[in-house]
Amino acid sequence: AWIGIAKTGIWLLSTGLVLTNLSDFWNLFAYLAGYGIGTLLGMEVERMISLGNVIVRLITPGDPQPMIAELSSLGYGMTRIEGSGSFSHTVTIIFMIVPRAELGRLLGILSTRYPDILYTVEDVRNMKEGARIFHHEAKTRVLGFFGL
Image 1: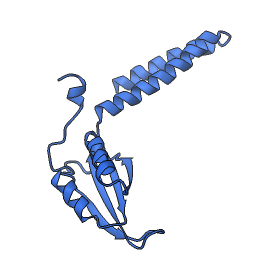
Image 2: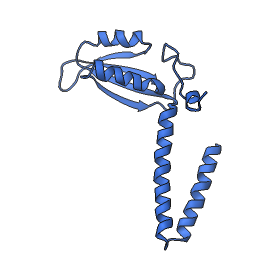
Image 3: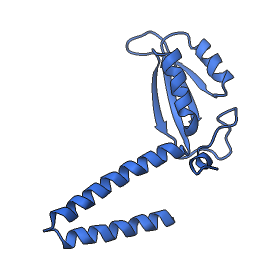
């Protein structure tokens, strides 16, 4: 909440200064540059902290059992659904909810060991509290980000 208050205050002050001095190009340029840099820094900090979970959908036309066995042994939980696709007869769709801090590791495994798999990643906004989605101790990056 405090971050939101500070962010709104800074926005009001900077917007007020720019709107009262529209004739000064450098004020407008500084506002635009600050807004852009702030957005990029915010996105980078969010990526580094890696809070929350993501849902990963894997769509594979072949036999998914070796991949399922490997990912399960690494602690990833998943739900498997059989389906059919436009360009292949049968496909397997695998849903995984993964801690955001583990996403890089999972995508690294998928890109090196299973390059033909189609995957999508989306944010998870709400989830049942206390649900166990990752069967090993998930590493949190929050304390590491602050050097603790």
